[in-house]
Amino acid sequence: MTAYLAGVCSSALSFVFIVFAIGALGYLVGGIKVKGIELGTAGVLLIALLWGIFIQFFPSFKIGEKEIFLFNNAIKGNFGIVSKIGTALFVTAVGLIAGPKFFRSFNRSTLAYIVLGVVVIALGAGTAVIFTILDKNCSSSMAVGLLTGGLTSTPGFSAGKEVVGVIEEDVTAGYGIAYLFGVLGVVLFVQIVPKILKVNMEEERANFSAANQTAVPEPKGSLIQIDPFGNFAFLFAVSLGCILGAIKIPGINFSLGNSGGCLIGGLIVGHFAHLGKVDCRIPKATLNFMRELGLVLFLIGAGVPGGVNFISKFRWIYFVYGAVMTTVPMVVGYIIARYVFKLSILNNLGAITGGMTSTPALGTLIATAGTDEVSAAYAATYPFALVSIVLAAKIIIMIL
Image (cartoon, rainbow, N blue to C red; front, side, top):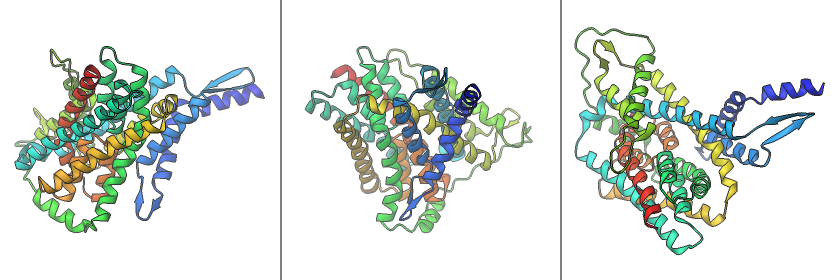
């Protein structure tokens, strides 16, 4: 009987079961509304982090002679794969949604997105440097971890760990400590700001759509459709993005990584909409599904290891530092976008989610705005923020 029970538990608590159970519970939690505000898909992150914290204390248990592992290095690697696949799906979908209008709608506001992408990261990096100078117990490695966690930047996190002389454990721990507020802070921000300003979302959506109307030319000639759901085109865009992301700039050893590369790949395929005679237009339903699925997988894959790392070197003051590194760039960036660049509320918040490199917040903003066209502002800002955070992570460790 004991052997049978051990076998059932081992099968029931398989990696696949855990991933989908976290997703299901996360949606339940995310659907709870308090005064009209909800976590949405970020509820998945919360459950993933809690699971990560739990398995830090109970990584395995025994039934009879059989030991059942809930977490070990092999399982940690599996979560890393889930995170990478989720990131690729999400940012490719965002690129494909924005692609048809992205390159055709370059105007003066494009400069605003570039500046915001750089400024938001610079504000976060400056805050990290100040805390490192003021607190001698906060190493530059810990500061980079807090910065990349507070800005939810996996590429920046990876870049920080690669610098010579870095304390990798500090970067990992800092990332885990700051990541929760980094996600929830921006997710709540994009919901609370419109409520505080008493924004008429229907009116804003109508004005936004009218201002961003760009004619998208239909491909000339008859095209060959490979499949009705557009899966070929989507998978081709992901593959192209991975190739682009792997290209390294000589000298500074910089690459866009899968996230940046897949965004660019999606923008390119979405813009041209065909590959020779092959139709690369993808139904909106497919893009929406891939975007949401990618977001959920990303949150699960990043959240569980983040929960594990959360406990290892946790100090309340580090959590506060991370929260400040999230809040200052977000609030100041919003003020600059509103009063300097005069961006509309939806373009403003879209640019902030891109500048903060916040994948979950974009999903929430799309739900709040009621239109996925806000993805264009995210897509315009994100690449510059991505490059900036990767460089900032390396510079902070090298100079401090």
